[in-house]
Length: 605
Image 1: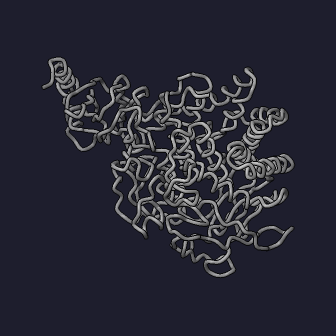
Image 2: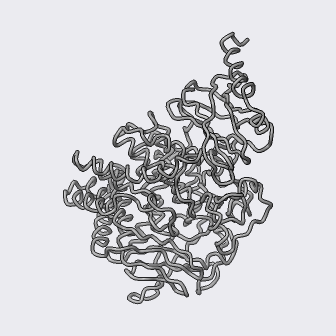
Image 3: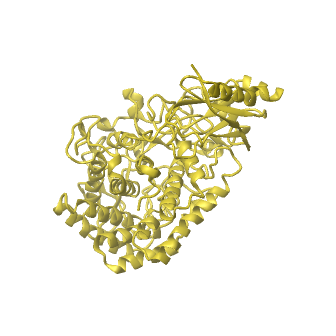
């Protein structure tokens, strides 16, 4: 039986939410236009906890209550009014951060009711491992989902006037997204952040899969197995100290809606046969009408160097031969980047889309920081500090828009990695670089209830994940919690605190609301769930309307929320918002591992 105190709390909650509400507020709460969005994965007791109301009309919200499993109100407060966002005519923040007791709860305001959620220290336990299910499904070479080797004839070098067409054995790696193209830029970054996750938060990962990706323990954390799969491919893609490959396949891949084992793409050597391998050349590339704007090697070389050097550090006591090889290749890649500064962009095919990476000093900073950590040679640390000063803030953070992958990676891990070894004054400067980017994004976030300030370009969930990661690393570096609200808001967005109420990670949590119709032929034809895959995420409506070949194949279940400037569709036909992406998934694995640690990973050095 509830005690008198609990009854009084419940009565007070009713007074705030209903009794003191105006007639306008009551009508809003009784209508089907008020939706409460919560983090479906849950909240840590020591973290900020905010639900957001999306109101599809102009009516107001008075107050709210949080009830436990028995239906008793355990927290009551007033809503904070914020501005419009996407299809939400008004938004309201429902802050219950003072509620720290573990348990299952719901948030209510009038007749509106949130999905149930948990508060607990273990709410993110196992989540980082869950994302590795998608990484394994994306494997080229041996693929554990299909139990066979896919794309084993890769590939033939193209677009290289110096060396000409010839076969090189580069099978392996991961498909970049729901097509089967493979890029060093995204794969090397994914490899690095998974290695970083193991280095910083090994306790977050289990051992349930073998190195092949098949089920079964092998004595190594699964995240280390997955990173090793990436390292093996990167070694094949950098076969000599002077020849560096950057891409396998191009958009001729999109001709057939096939599964990986039955890929019928024909690149000129017969259906399902060899795929093209694009090298870094230091100049523009593209076999057809469209060409990229490549100017050098360094953006790719720095990523190679960082992944190889961190891999060498982590394998020193596990596989000395591999560690020695990785160390040598890290040095070679870094030297090539210094000799050939500039960007090596991905190559377009018959469509105008490619990864338009315009920055490279961030990649060289990261490579230098890892080589210093591995060798303790001071010139690498000096290089890292110098490169850091040339791009203090990742440029998208101060921009309203960007071209596709124009500034990549989406946050510069190099600043944190250099900070780990820098002098006290250099540490202060590096932390200030992170702060500058966080301030720019946060300044755009204060006017909407979701507290998000990223530009909604293609792959917006990558930006959301990176903003949260940079905020967490800044908090770890400085102890400063000024951006904690925005960090948590970005993280919450990914798990359902968004206008559509959708977790942007397929199958996480498994009893939650997530994409059932992602843009994936593997999911569509096999009828399986791509567990762990992070979706591209919402985009500006103008971007959605401008992209080639997009059409919705089902009625839009979120039509009421897609009336504003930002849209999302759970539809197979929408490759701009609903396609899972490998690199963002790997980055989120780091963030989830950190968030599962004591103090949200914020105190670890």
